[in-house]
Image (cartoon, rainbow, N blue to C red):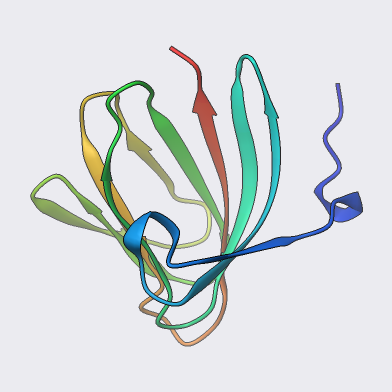
Length: 109
């Protein structure tokens, strides 16, 4: 099955999960989980949140930023995959000077 994000209408979400500014996303969702492409402008973030029912994998396509993961901080760069297992918390912050774009996969568990 192909998912063509370039054919989807992007959705703008203000203060996603309590984060700063807005997030642009194209998302595919079914009973098995979610697959999404996210874009965060410089200074934008996804708020710190708990994954109590699922895990999440984030693959950075372009830009730079950081993930706050439990009590640590991780650099996000193109080609990096950040993993937040079920039962852990994280946030994504665009701390760079260009748009941070990444894919996120959240399987139903």
